[in-house]
Image: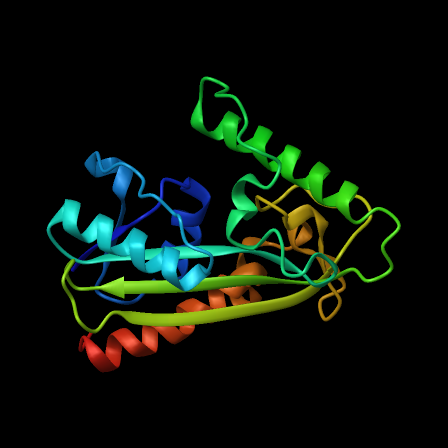
Length: 208
Protein backbone atom coordinates (compact mmCIF):
# COMPACT_ATOMS: atom_id res chain seq x y z
CA UNK A 1 0.00 0.00 0.00
CA UNK A 2 1.40 3.39 -0.97
CA UNK A 3 1.21 5.94 1.83
CA UNK A 4 2.09 9.52 0.92
CA UNK A 5 3.87 11.42 3.69
CA UNK A 6 2.68 15.01 3.85
CA UNK A 7 6.19 16.37 4.40
CA UNK A 8 9.34 17.21 2.46
CA UNK A 9 11.60 16.75 5.49
CA UNK A 10 14.07 14.05 4.42
CA UNK A 11 15.11 13.21 7.99
CA UNK A 12 11.49 12.89 9.12
CA UNK A 13 10.84 10.54 6.18
CA UNK A 14 13.83 8.39 7.20
CA UNK A 15 12.63 8.21 10.81
CA UNK A 16 9.10 7.24 9.83
CA UNK A 17 10.27 4.66 7.28
CA UNK A 18 12.23 2.97 10.06
CA UNK A 19 9.33 3.22 12.52
CA UNK A 20 6.86 1.62 10.09
CA UNK A 21 9.26 -1.06 8.89
CA UNK A 22 7.57 -4.45 8.68
CA UNK A 23 4.15 -3.18 7.62
CA UNK A 24 3.09 -3.57 3.96
CA UNK A 25 3.54 0.16 3.32
CA UNK A 26 5.57 2.12 0.79
CA UNK A 27 6.09 5.53 2.41
CA UNK A 28 6.64 8.23 -0.24
CA UNK A 29 7.32 11.91 0.44
CA UNK A 30 4.78 14.19 -1.21
CA UNK A 31 7.54 16.20 -2.89
CA UNK A 32 8.49 13.15 -4.94
CA UNK A 33 5.00 13.33 -6.44
CA UNK A 34 5.12 17.07 -7.05
CA UNK A 35 2.66 17.83 -4.24
CA UNK A 36 3.08 21.25 -2.67
CA UNK A 37 3.07 21.68 1.10
CA UNK A 38 -0.30 22.46 2.67
CA UNK A 39 -1.20 25.52 4.67
CA UNK A 40 -0.96 25.05 8.45
CA UNK A 41 -3.17 27.81 9.85
CA UNK A 42 -4.46 26.05 12.96
CA UNK A 43 -3.58 26.47 16.64
CA UNK A 44 -3.24 22.77 17.49
CA UNK A 45 -1.08 19.91 16.23
CA UNK A 46 -4.06 17.65 15.50
CA UNK A 47 -5.86 20.24 13.35
CA UNK A 48 -2.75 20.92 11.28
CA UNK A 49 -2.00 17.21 10.87
CA UNK A 50 -5.54 16.60 9.63
CA UNK A 51 -5.24 19.47 7.15
CA UNK A 52 -1.90 18.25 5.83
CA UNK A 53 -2.98 14.62 5.51
CA UNK A 54 -6.21 15.56 3.71
CA UNK A 55 -4.32 17.86 1.31
CA UNK A 56 -1.81 15.14 0.42
CA UNK A 57 -4.50 12.45 0.10
CA UNK A 58 -6.54 14.63 -2.25
CA UNK A 59 -3.54 15.54 -4.41
CA UNK A 60 -2.25 11.96 -4.55
CA UNK A 61 -5.66 10.34 -5.00
CA UNK A 62 -5.03 7.82 -2.23
CA UNK A 63 -3.81 7.18 1.29
CA UNK A 64 -1.72 9.76 3.12
CA UNK A 65 -0.19 10.39 6.52
CA UNK A 66 0.90 13.60 8.19
CA UNK A 67 3.00 14.28 11.25
CA UNK A 68 2.56 17.60 12.97
CA UNK A 69 5.07 17.88 15.73
CA UNK A 70 6.94 20.42 17.75
CA UNK A 71 8.33 21.56 21.06
CA UNK A 72 6.17 22.78 23.94
CA UNK A 73 8.06 24.64 26.69
CA UNK A 74 6.39 25.00 30.10
CA UNK A 75 7.82 28.43 30.93
CA UNK A 76 6.66 29.77 27.55
CA UNK A 77 3.07 28.65 27.97
CA UNK A 78 3.49 25.82 25.48
CA UNK A 79 5.34 27.86 22.86
CA UNK A 80 6.75 27.48 20.30
CA UNK A 81 4.13 24.75 19.74
CA UNK A 82 2.73 24.57 16.21
CA UNK A 83 5.19 27.21 14.96
CA UNK A 84 8.23 25.26 16.22
CA UNK A 85 9.62 24.84 12.70
CA UNK A 86 9.94 28.61 12.21
CA UNK A 87 9.80 30.09 15.71
CA UNK A 88 12.53 32.59 14.84
CA UNK A 89 10.80 33.67 11.65
CA UNK A 90 11.29 32.18 8.20
CA UNK A 91 14.90 32.11 7.04
CA UNK A 92 15.92 33.23 3.57
CA UNK A 93 16.33 30.48 0.97
CA UNK A 94 19.90 29.15 1.11
CA UNK A 95 19.68 27.70 -2.40
CA UNK A 96 19.32 24.10 -1.23
CA UNK A 97 16.54 22.66 0.92
CA UNK A 98 18.70 21.03 3.60
CA UNK A 99 20.98 24.06 3.87
CA UNK A 100 17.92 26.24 4.43
CA UNK A 101 16.61 23.80 7.02
CA UNK A 102 19.94 23.83 8.90
CA UNK A 103 19.94 27.64 8.95
CA UNK A 104 16.36 27.62 10.22
CA UNK A 105 17.21 25.11 12.95
CA UNK A 106 20.14 27.23 14.12
CA UNK A 107 17.99 30.37 14.24
CA UNK A 108 15.21 28.57 16.13
CA UNK A 109 17.63 27.22 18.71
CA UNK A 110 19.13 30.67 19.24
CA UNK A 111 15.61 32.10 19.64
CA UNK A 112 14.75 29.49 22.27
CA UNK A 113 17.93 30.05 24.29
CA UNK A 114 17.31 33.79 24.30
CA UNK A 115 13.70 33.36 25.46
CA UNK A 116 14.81 31.08 28.32
CA UNK A 117 17.85 33.10 29.40
CA UNK A 118 17.85 33.15 33.21
CA UNK A 119 14.69 31.04 33.41
CA UNK A 120 14.99 28.32 36.10
CA UNK A 121 12.08 26.26 34.77
CA UNK A 122 13.50 24.40 31.75
CA UNK A 123 10.80 21.70 31.47
CA UNK A 124 9.68 20.89 27.93
CA UNK A 125 8.18 18.14 25.84
CA UNK A 126 8.38 17.09 22.24
CA UNK A 127 4.90 16.38 20.87
CA UNK A 128 3.98 14.35 17.78
CA UNK A 129 0.53 13.92 16.27
CA UNK A 130 0.19 11.44 13.42
CA UNK A 131 -2.90 11.38 11.20
CA UNK A 132 -3.49 8.79 8.48
CA UNK A 133 -6.40 8.51 6.08
CA UNK A 134 -7.26 6.13 3.26
CA UNK A 135 -8.49 8.95 1.01
CA UNK A 136 -9.27 12.65 1.30
CA UNK A 137 -12.90 12.08 2.31
CA UNK A 138 -12.13 9.33 4.83
CA UNK A 139 -14.66 9.78 7.66
CA UNK A 140 -12.47 7.79 10.05
CA UNK A 141 -8.95 9.22 10.05
CA UNK A 142 -6.54 7.43 12.37
CA UNK A 143 -5.00 9.72 15.00
CA UNK A 144 -2.06 8.88 17.27
CA UNK A 145 -0.17 10.96 19.83
CA UNK A 146 3.30 10.82 21.36
CA UNK A 147 4.88 12.99 24.07
CA UNK A 148 8.55 12.95 25.14
CA UNK A 149 9.45 14.77 28.35
CA UNK A 150 12.73 16.57 28.86
CA UNK A 151 14.50 19.81 29.75
CA UNK A 152 16.04 22.58 27.67
CA UNK A 153 19.82 22.85 27.99
CA UNK A 154 21.64 26.17 28.22
CA UNK A 155 23.82 25.28 25.19
CA UNK A 156 23.56 22.75 22.32
CA UNK A 157 25.00 19.25 22.73
CA UNK A 158 25.48 16.65 20.00
CA UNK A 159 25.54 16.60 16.22
CA UNK A 160 22.69 14.23 15.37
CA UNK A 161 19.01 14.67 14.73
CA UNK A 162 17.48 17.96 13.63
CA UNK A 163 15.40 20.84 14.92
CA UNK A 164 15.67 21.37 18.68
CA UNK A 165 17.38 18.00 19.29
CA UNK A 166 20.71 19.55 20.44
CA UNK A 167 18.91 21.52 23.18
CA UNK A 168 16.55 18.81 24.45
CA UNK A 169 17.97 16.91 27.41
CA UNK A 170 16.30 13.60 28.29
CA UNK A 171 16.99 12.92 31.99
CA UNK A 172 15.91 9.28 31.74
CA UNK A 173 18.60 8.66 29.11
CA UNK A 174 21.27 11.04 30.44
CA UNK A 175 21.71 12.55 26.99
CA UNK A 176 20.57 15.24 24.64
CA UNK A 177 18.43 13.98 21.77
CA UNK A 178 21.18 15.00 19.32
CA UNK A 179 23.61 12.66 21.14
CA UNK A 180 21.37 9.61 20.73
CA UNK A 181 21.88 7.05 18.00
CA UNK A 182 19.09 6.77 15.46
CA UNK A 183 18.21 3.36 16.88
CA UNK A 184 17.82 4.66 20.44
CA UNK A 185 15.90 7.73 19.28
CA UNK A 186 13.51 5.54 17.29
CA UNK A 187 12.73 3.53 20.43
CA UNK A 188 12.04 6.45 22.76
CA UNK A 189 11.02 9.57 20.84
CA UNK A 190 7.65 11.30 20.66
CA UNK A 191 7.43 10.25 17.02
CA UNK A 192 8.27 6.66 17.96
CA UNK A 193 5.49 6.61 20.57
CA UNK A 194 3.00 8.04 18.08
CA UNK A 195 4.14 5.57 15.42
CA UNK A 196 3.67 2.62 17.78
CA UNK A 197 0.08 3.72 18.36
CA UNK A 198 -0.46 4.29 14.64
CA UNK A 199 0.89 0.84 13.72
CA UNK A 200 -1.67 -0.73 16.07
CA UNK A 201 -4.47 1.43 14.66
CA UNK A 202 -3.54 0.54 11.07
CA UNK A 203 -3.47 -3.14 11.88
CA UNK A 204 -6.83 -2.99 13.66
CA UNK A 205 -8.73 -0.58 11.39
CA UNK A 206 -7.05 -1.11 8.03
CA UNK A 207 -6.18 -4.79 8.42
CA UNK A 208 -2.50 -4.32 7.61
